[in-house]
Length: 260
View 1 (cartoon, rainbow, N blue to C red):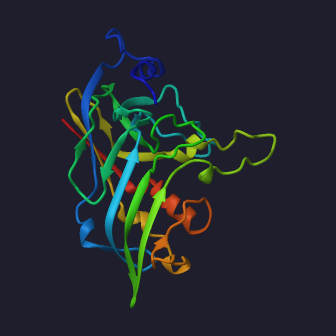
View 2: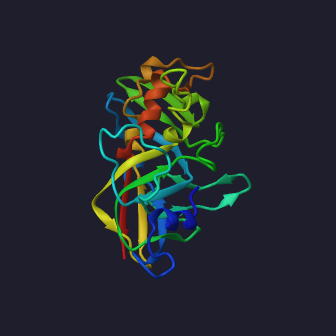
View 3: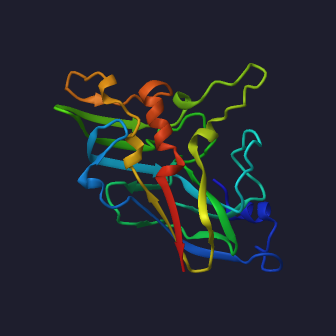
């Protein structure tokens, strides 16, 4: 993860208090959205009732600008664009924060967030437990369970999503082995901040994560029940597992706000 020293160097602003924007500190919180426990309907027509939905993320970053469309593949680290950062603590080799997506209660990050007194135009959520470039990360990004119902049929289901070689796209050709790095699969971006977030000292950054859309494209009829009668969404790049992964990493599920 990026340190505040990297943040200051990349921005080339007044982290030393001499030039440019002032360095600010603020609180950061994350939580689910209200009403999830009442159940919801997916785009495929399933009525879904969740009993568990927990997301793990490593960090959030606020950026000064949105990458230009048509500019090609955007690298994972964007020097000169960072406005702020917030991340959770490390427990051994696992870093980051866990959020119960069934609860709208906001959990405060234990580390003070840092940034500059400027306006952020977009945000990133890093779905990792440590090094975003690590080939393998076995920490579940999302664990979810519940029942999906369609007409008279019930589908008790579960899923455990990790992001490693199972979700790494192959390179476009042998001459470009690093064209699809794993870090790009772990970063949810660009999350547009409209009309923008003006960071201020002593403020609070809130991240709301909406789990309801993460199951929109899962067709439970296409899954096969196990011997216990339960259905498991596969943790893989193709098919239903791939559709589930796309929805979890969609920017639509993540909403930021800031208050002084």
